[in-house]
Image (cartoon, rainbow, N blue to C red; front, side, top):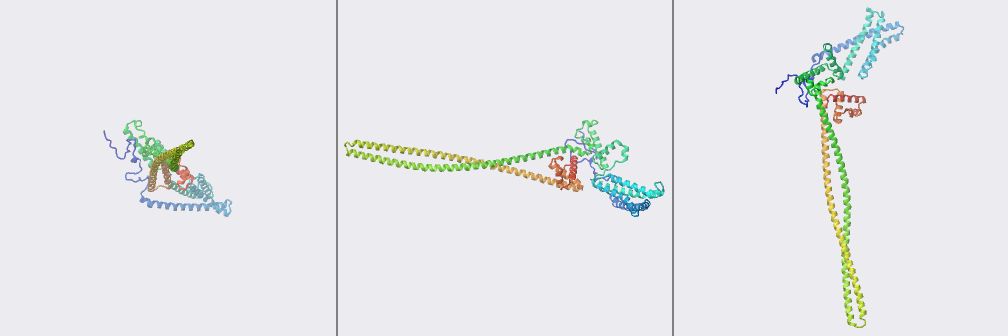
Length: 528
């Protein structure tokens, strides 16, 4: 593969879809030494240091002298003519002042309105009309409107006075346009004669896209021509059909005033803007996820509180069951004692009855045996009833013991359930701590992002200070950075009121204009 060596000063062609961000040499208005080239027709700084102030002084003195002489000549001529035209002495003295002062007043008001950006052409037209009136009145005051040396001598001074005022007006207007960055350099006449159609395209591009410098426009045109030649060298005669769309962007967007670097950087800026939008969407999703996690944590806290309340109720139930168990055990012990006492009493009664019966049987072998036996049977019946009562009492004690065992089993189950609830509560507390850690990490990332935004804003302000931009340009760049960082580059999402607040309470018109200028900067590829 043959390596092509590019000659110095040529425009490098893009070889991949990822274009470099460094500016091309042919599209930069800075020369090889790193300084801005000297404009056409400019003098050296040493000459300007003494020549221009001297010219200003000479112009001011000469113009003032011509104005004073013209006003004095016009005043004396019109005053004498006014006396002959029927004006009284007082009005004859005021009449020349009213005529000549109206010219100065109209031109001064015209300059004021131009400075306020509300020009009214009627004022300048009125000043010119009054100039014509002054010339006619001065000429007709001596000899009428005829071409003669006498008429010309009285008409030339007002003409010189008006020419001096117009020169001052042009100087003030041009200074104001230079301060506002609106002064447009014209295209030389020889270019119109030598190449009218390309010159018309160049002039049209300068007017449409506010290319104020003719030299800059020529350099941009030269860079595009070199770029087209390099494309032809790379792809051949059919380069317009063979070249990739991104390679043709500088030529396609040339009518819109874009440089080669700006056109080549458009795809990269679009990708960066898309990445920025994706990042913003991810941040919004992360914020929403964090809010959802916080809501879940709050819900879990509420569930944990409800479970704790339930556990407290279960503990109260367990305490009641333990109290019942204790009372049951006491009743069981008491019942056992009663059964033992009843058995002992029944045994004693039985033994006493048996002994009594034996004694009576031994002593009485008479007819009273039947009665004794009947009495013994009655006593045996009473004994059987006592034994039955003791058995019933024993059965009741067994039932009470069974109830106590069931209460103890239920208490063990409650203790097991309480342990499980405590384990769940510990797990939920761990989840809450993890969520708090995630929230702290998100806050730390947001703080880092804000710190990076502040650093970027300070860097932009330092760059603007080095560039010595006008306050209006700084304000427009400030609004452009806010739109790029907070609104994803969408100008319409930032209202005029928000722009006014960002500018420290500026008026609605000023805020609207700064937003339009910020939109133009973003459209031109400004990234802050």
